[in-house]
Length: 304
Length: 250
Image (cartoon, rainbow over all chains, first blue to last red; front, side):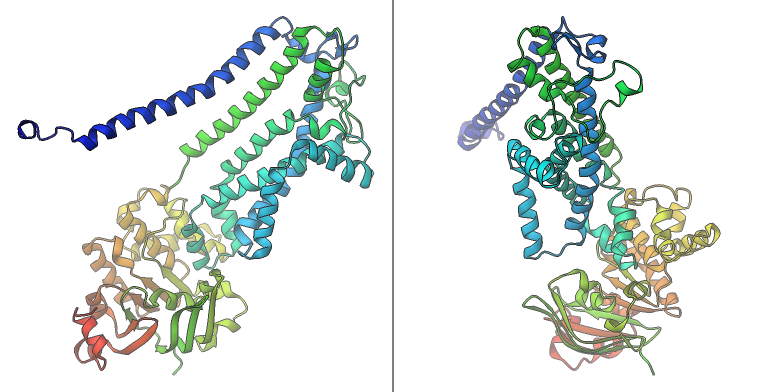
């Protein structure tokens, strides 16, 4: 009673407990956050340390030599680049247009709900299943044979659902009232999408696409049966070294290359394995930074 | 005489819920037509039935005929042409995420006006009519969404005027505007009457009394009473109307 008189702000029993719980929750969530960061840092430091002897410009630009015990990783690197490029050319327009349809035009009926369910489930299909599907659908059924195009199509199918979903989310973040205002002025749905919705969601859409680049570059399973090869002789310099694979050629890729040199090939120096892994992680980090940059740009440019 | 807008036994359903029931109503040209009524009375639905924006609500179903210039709006092939003839202002201000200039030039551009001088004349005229010109004339290229709420609402009014509509629908336009500006805009509305028909949905009963030539009272999806504003406010036939306009409702 007297303490209440002296200090009107003294904590009650309830507030006392509340403060304790607050502290507990805060430290738990903080600890979990650190737990997330530690493995990431550990992996990167370990990789770079192990890969250090191999890392050099030559390692990036030279082709594998002497059964991969010498040279570098140019062939797989450029192979991965083309795989990502071709799969994006297929998946990005398809996914973005499908996302626009689903978010802007589709009525909420059972067909739409079924499509949305299919998209969500497709996103959850394991990549090895995508690989087998690609083998059946593109390599055999469509008769593409094992090649860059078949592998790109497979990777495109794998990345499509996430591109569709992120496009839908980016579009849905544009307030409905903007659309209603435009419709009331006699604008068509497409005019509204073109002038208001897309300009204000394009950064979000691109972020989703860019994140899929990292995924397309990293997966081994979808290209395992559909076009990746252990080793192919490609030119060391000139135009043929820049564009070594046509759409109908089999190709080398970083993820598959790493799998081969770590499990199937003997006498490959350890630093080469870690070097390849480090380059892959580096690519993923670079691509993700790009998407983070996009998001910062998006936030700075936010117009409402 | 042909009415600007005529409702013939119009009912609107949202799924199973009824939003408007058997509305019969004539709105003559060049009048300010006031609509009053409590929340959920169907006032906004009434406006949406005119320019067929109800079609964006997939569950909405309309029966009866809405005539615009004597033509059933559902027979109009080019619905965008119909929407251009109706300007709408919503209760909450919506500045589009583009410059003030582009906000007002949006509708004219969509209808094919690209001449720079022509566009500029429209923008200046509409901003002046909406009482916003003096505040924004030096910063026409600032984002419309960065304006204050009241300014954005006047920007919305300017936008609704930008396609020179035959009918201007104002849905509780003054909610976000200060009383002084509201009075100024009310003066503008009285002037605009000679150019267009104005439908004024308002929660401020006195606003309808000040401005409207005729007033309709909606309650629970039904049109309770319509008549000259004078009559509605002094000697309404229906007890409900009397209670509502005298503030004794509910």
